[in-house]
Image (cartoon, rainbow, N blue to C red; front, top):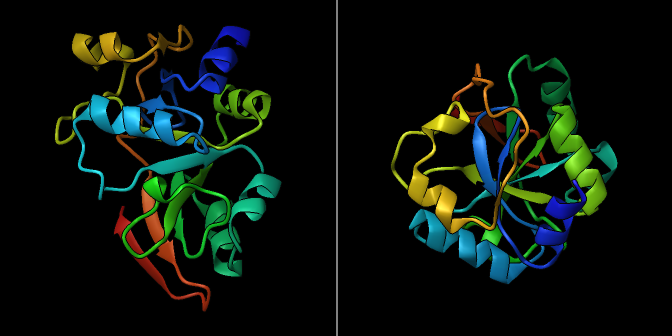
Amino acid sequence: MENIINILKSGGTILYPTDTIWGIGCDATNVEAINKIFEIKKREKNKSMIILVESEKRLQDLVDVPQMAWEIIDLSEKPVTIVYENPRGLPKELLAEDGSVGIRLVKNDFCKKLITKLNKPLVSTSANFSGDKSPLKFSDISPEIISLVDYAVEEDREKVSKYSGSSVIKIWSDNRIKVLRE
């Protein structure tokens, strides 16, 4: 774990298991690391990436959380990413064109521990080239992607995700909601 944290703190990128699929991640406050991920994925810079947080407190430090969001987080069986308006303290490179950001409060123990030790939110984007199929298990990840990141986590490499991604729901401050991905 210390090695992973040192890599992230020095602007590195990692492959890691999330509460859904395998992801490519970095410190969500490091613009150079974020740009590395766009290059690795061959992803257009106008396509935003989500971030993961481990606690309600960190979520509230980044955004004003509408009551409806708490209800969805509490009731959702499947991991859910919520798109919030007006985030604080995040680089513009992570934000959608309208200035919003997708954040998932993780329930997965490995991710919680990783984010707690890093003490910063973590970028999470599928461990694939933009447009390719998302990896449900480590062996689904392209060898080229593996060679482009700074570290591939050993944890859960044999595990197959039961989710091909999280649900994505946009919630406005007035509690209006729109399901972007089920």
